[in-house]
Length: 71
Image (cartoon, rainbow, N blue to C red; front, side):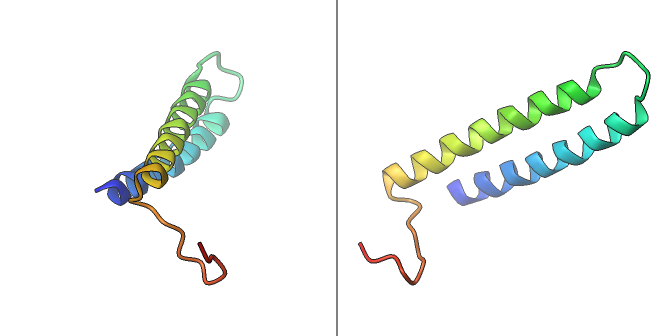
């Protein structure tokens, strides 16, 4: 379940990144703050992603599987 949440957060970050880019180019000269709001959403999602990753490693749900990792 945690891995699904992580993937959803990643897709949310990517969607916010692209929406912020669209708003940046579309709102040139306007005083609309949609780009700033997209940045806020992206930062919030990134913080939630980091919390999920730390929680997953701390509880043992996420473990490194790199070939060079020998615990």
